[in-house]
Figure (tube, rainbow, N blue to C red):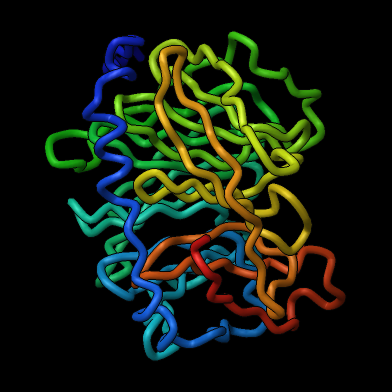
Length: 321
């Protein structure tokens, strides 16, 4: 399939509007966050991986064990099933699109990769895109015109086109190979993982195998390394989350830490400054995080825990900086 994607130029990245958009969304509401639950219990045995949020205090968590999606309130800690589980289905990344009220999810049914769009009120599957040749669909971001998905064992972006207002078109996916200075994977270890968009049209990816942050042109797949100044640097990474000028990298600096960075756009593209590493006593191998109601919320995947199909799981509230 031939897919026309928005063009990206360096001039676009250097507009003051891009940096202004980052700064405008960077305010923190710590007083509000301090009144929220420190942890939210998830169903036993769910084996969570992805988390997303919206509108308001509503959250969504996907299951590796049976592909269910649960939803609830970050204010009250309530949890209910939105999408029931199914034999052989596994869900990793999630992303809520406020334009459509759709929760986009990526994962597998058996060995076949899928990108699903699920109604955030009814749990109905509105769209199901089968991804040929997918190996390990992992994380995703929804932009104005497309859904971009990382495949952690194939060096490419999977692209699902969107119609007006972000509605699914039902069209086949397209693929953008990762190039430039992107560190090619070995087909075994986890490579590309977290993904988010940046003002101006580019994407930011992390790399679980070699660490670091990467700016990627979504049209060509050409990647450049984003320099990170200060701190220990990004040595690993699972999920990414961005709000305004703040970028969070889950497990970017340690097994139970989230690295906090400040983004800025310079003459040669995006750069990041290390701010801190945040954690909580309840963090237990977090996988992904979402920003909502003035706090950062990380889902505890507890990879490697004994009896994972009956173990306890939770969401932890973290400081934002």
